[in-house]
Image 1 (cartoon, rainbow, N blue to C red):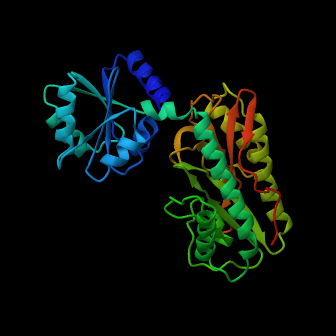
Image 2 (image 1 turned 45 degrees about the horizontal axis):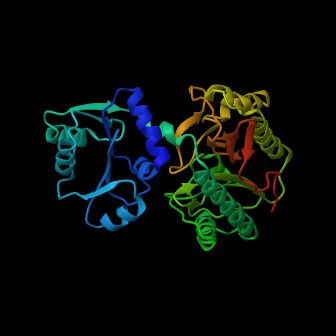
Image 3 (image 1 turned 135 degrees about the vertical axis):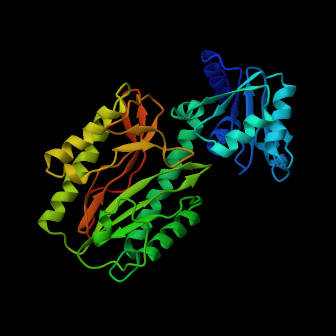
Amino acid sequence: MNARLSRLRSVLKERSLEAILIFHGPNRQYISGFNGSSGYAVVTGEHALLLTDFRYVSQAAEQAPTFIVKRHGDQPFESIADQVRKLGIRELAVEGNRLSMAQAERLKEKLTGIACVPTEEIVEKLRNVKDVVEIASLREAARIADEAFFQLLPLIRPGTTERKIAAELEYRIRLLGAECGWPGFIVASGYRSALPHGVASAKEIGNNEFVTLDFGAIVNGYMSDVTRTVFVGKPNEKQREIYDAVLAANEKAIRGLRPGMNGKQGDALGRDVIDARGYGEYFGHGLGHGIGLEIHEQLRLSQQSDSILEPGNVLTVEPGVYIPNVEGVRIEDDVLITPHGAEVLTSSPKALIAL
């Protein structure tokens, strides 16, 4: 955590910021190591302070040894203001994109006489480049997701509901030692496979249809994000054509990703393949996004993204084709950007599996 604090302090110095209040949970965990559900971090060039409520004081002291831990009262913003004044802070940067309007107003009220400077994505951008500890957790999260998928395959058959498949997948991930923190795995079959975010429903899986599964495991707070689309029955020529287009886009993008490339260029690697195959109108989302402590992080591969890829980035590559009310296919891998290209962390088979 000392290295992460040093990086944050360097950014504060570059931006002539005296101190920052970290409000967003994943940002607080990244900087301090504390993963409780409630807390606020204040970081200056010399001080690192963590405020939390009575439930987490001992946990915070254990998980954030480089921080001074303070218990806040029933009005946490009052406690923050008291500590900020004790530190002699005159200007406090705040995560403007993470506070509600009501929270921002209450904070300004308590910090009378102290200037609040709204900032965006200071810590999020630091989080884009993973260290060796983070990469190890992401590797293990990918490995567990892959193993759970392998165990699940024999259970995908006609008459089984999407919700049962999602439950079986979550059960196996937990048995393998990981957590599942998603609001709901995507299991979308038949016409529902055309829904990019088709969370599992009561629909029964039928014969001769695609089943898209989007899932992941959480290890030490770090999340994998995997999608595989399988077929129940015997796919026809058109269905194989769609699948092959998505697979070709996935593989070409992974081969082409390099440090120094921007998000638009990365997105085009896969999008151009789908466009050339005649399915461009059915690919409406970006090619990928960063993953880590959150399932969607600041880094993006999209037609609007100016993000620059760096060694240590971990992101998804997930082209898809979605034909409304008919069917859809998505194939998603997690990749690590290295000095020479992209290393794939996920290993579930990508050749079309017909069950």
